[in-house]
Length: 242
Image (cartoon, rainbow, N blue to C red; front, side, top):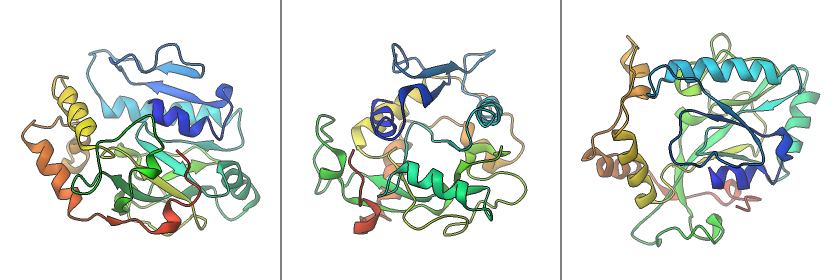
């Protein structure tokens, strides 16, 4: 959350930033100078259906106040070298598009050549590896209410899951920082194991979003992603100052 807030505070006033607190327990949403909205939970467990419906509801409400809304989860950093206001103004001026899809990259730690992340130093000076993550190329900037599916990778109607390079503008990137540091990733995944999870889906692909992970699979998942990482193209980090 601190990295997310630091990034988006470069582009938006605190009064225009909204955080949906999905039953967090680490205190990261306490005493913030932005708007914090608590996601109601009947069980105290992670429920992606409830979260999805909450995001859809609040995006629709915010579009009654704003002409354009950006949506990003706490490990997703949207950026453009000309700034996010440029992205918003481009979308508003484009009469042929209702939303923009990001070009997403898994931005990750290469432990063989990169040290443990120092959060007091800029990330872009410490991390240079990743890969194009087509499933993460989501519709995250919109001027109309979207009907997201689980994982927010698509919305029903005119937006398919596999749409990299479509309905976007050049240079609009999203850096997925879930694996920006292996130890931070490992700790976060272990914390998730401790929480009971509701998994009400019939579709196995959707159900995967609500499953906890076994501790022994954490390294395997990281290594599976690491197989794809390469030095990121220069343009992906151009203008990224976090």
